[in-house]
Image (cartoon, rainbow, N blue to C red; front, side):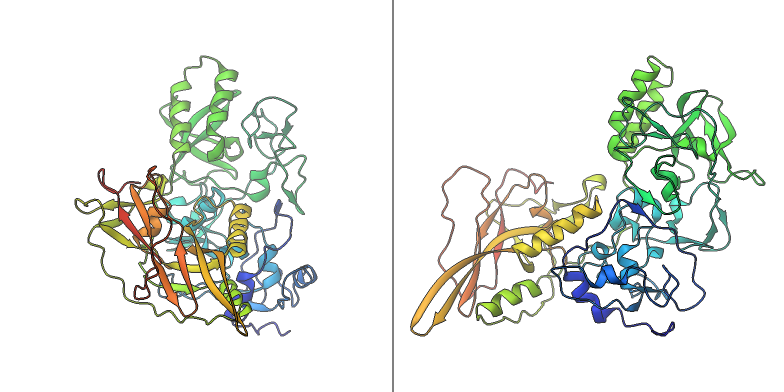
Length: 515
């Protein structure tokens, strides 16, 4: 294959997006690729992907050719076109960031294209905020394909221009004290390995990440992935054997030695210079365990209130990055898995026409930080008022499980779960014989949605789903009734062929629509 010939990313994208999750080692780190100077694969730099055989020969899935494609980033919504090229196999097996999964990220409900790693904030992504990571303005490292939000600029980095930075080189040798608990689980018991490059300690059972460039027995996960710490952010500093809370300085002093950064210490009330590899920020999910270990290790230390506040705020943290407003699309769409089901049972394929969404006069979508999106009332809503109709993409149960598996593998804290369980009634005609069947289906509102999708995923919405049936030739949909009280209500209403609705959401009363 010629180096400068790239296939349009849309050619293979649909089959790639809809195939089973690829089998691979997810606990692996691959090197951050250097910025390419030629039109070659940005991950491997070669004519043929080194994972081509594994990619094309995976069992129980349609064969997808390992072609060189252009990065799919770039549109009116997400900026200029990216010129990076990559083999589908290299993109699939690339792990330059923790939990980076190109197949998951390429799904229609996410980016709907194969993107290279230059379009995600590495810090936000590593923290599990994978949807946020792809939003907002990014700074790009000069030498490698790495990016960071403008508000996530790493400590020690140098600004080179409007959107270019030069990352500080990570120290590789450390000879001082180490933490007395595992940096991955927060617990202090059992044997701890010591990282040769920083203060972290870890259990081998917790640290499963492998890399061709590092030894797992002597290098912690953060050092393997070269995890960065934001400037102007609180973190731990190991000083004289005690973890104290400090704030990294936004603009470090000029001409600092390599591996040295400035932090603001509450103890000394002024900026001090420290070794970069003496800092540690725990993963968000272990903040409680870290606090318990810290209390046990340091007893009634005077820094306890500061540590408690730091870990509590870290536990509740959510990136303050502007996200695009959710688009309200009131239409049904048929996923290929459902279309195949209809064809297999000799059913007519309906042609849904998207229609302009009317402004909902009763409710609106609002973002609530860590809780995500919710629905609030614009005005007082009477019991029985119709809130809206549930729209989305009709998929099979198997497709729902495939999407769920990808999101679990990827560990995306912001994975979009807007699934409504429904059924399909259909009739199979065989000569003079007609047989009626029911089949479970899913309406996934990750792509096509209005306010009702957010209600369906909310914690305790004071609404109820009314059953409606949409007639499409010899078959129709109906939804199982979602009932919040104990009254006996029939599961079905008579078939109404005039309505173009699958399920209506009505208000039950008792206040406003809630999260």
